[in-house]
Image: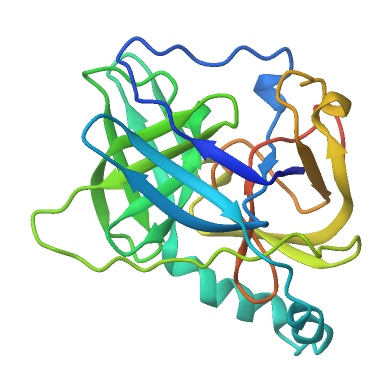
Length: 254
């Protein structure tokens, strides 16, 4: 599994009803991580378009000290912090459906997921997000960027809500061997958790067969499967350091 590293990943394209899914020679078996780990989320919007920016945050040496002192249930502790803001993303367009994962980054209900999860949406499509407690809400596409494979959804509710959020961590100081957890809904099995380590950092997209994407990825052996796409990869502080997006076909632990 992989995570992108970049100075600023921008999801800034207005959604069109005729948008088509991104072609990929390995897409059916690929999952990946587009790294939000270097980032602090700031959402910018105006009358003409909706823009979501993930901007670089400084490295935090304190995370090394926190992650060094592991409790007996350190994985469970990290999951408990993050899971309330993780959602299942279900798309129903009548003649096709898809499922993925996502996570809330703002109290007003902005959800990050992968662009390919909602790539085939049209005017008739219905998007529903389901939280860990079973509550379900409709959502609409706020903005999307197919190059970085990031989409932002907006949860809709009849009443004003303060949604649970998950903080974004810093990945500039990540090292191979650090523990991470992948959260999401593989095969539509919501609230699933897998754990592993960071296997490598700074993998270029060309190594994965995506030279046009640019940027760098983080490799992890945490299990990722279909349906995990768009879910968070979190550190032991329960902070997002990546978006589950890619798994190498036919591999184990990559």
